[in-house]
Image (tube, rainbow, N blue to C red; front, side, top):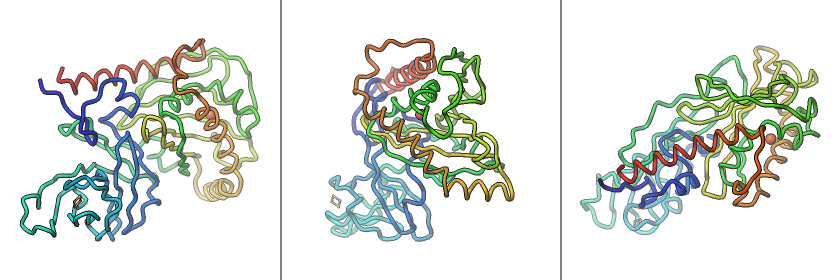
Length: 346
Ligand code: FES
Ligand SMILES: [Fe+2]
């Protein structure tokens, strides 16, 4: 069978390369919606590929490969013409579906009307641009479904976006490792309490698996659920002191999208279950005080993850707390193998 190329790369990738730059055929959060204004455009790199995000004047968003179909100049240095981009090099115009709409240097050229640039299926929800990143040109996008905690209108959330100079797999390891809360975040506003020793267990759930302390709940970062839906994410809750206002526990939905093999785009939605005046209090308190505290916690994670050696996950000595880490690695190794086999035509 024929070896297939990975969309946007012009080559096939092996399992290790897929695991490093990101598994395909799933939805990923790409960028906060507000970063692309109506009539605006911006270049982003995701899963090792350069993309152009642009909005038409009415606000409709498109995501196409940042590469002109003529001679591959980046479209992001071209001109935004409302519903299309004109390449800077020779003026070829490409619309949001990736179709060449005009070749001004040679009217009537066969390239006109051809869909010659990759265009992705996108969705906007929870203040975020999401895209389905296909493995091959034959991949069919799956339906876009937002994580339940974000889709639930009883929750009020804030998106937090960051870019970290570390591989995305380190982010996933980190969130499947709740025990670091009691150490790395010991001096934070929300994770100072509870035991510094614990035993963990894994249990299967409908959406993925639950990784939890067996002897402590509701005190610190005591559990996390890895969820597989249209996209992979983690769902967790951290207790909040009464001074953090109404809404009970603090829910977090977390995702990481590889920028390339050494950098990651990190998305966290911070949520609370609040309505009416409580919702206003939560939103006020978050902006006035809590957001800064959360940045401090996130910076503690970033500091460690960026300091990890590129081969940090080789030659470790894992113990019982690392069951979640082992599980997620196994899962992604198997996904990567499957995708590599599909590319090899096996
Ligand atoms: S490279 Fe874009 S028009 Fe020639
Ligand atoms: Fe953390």
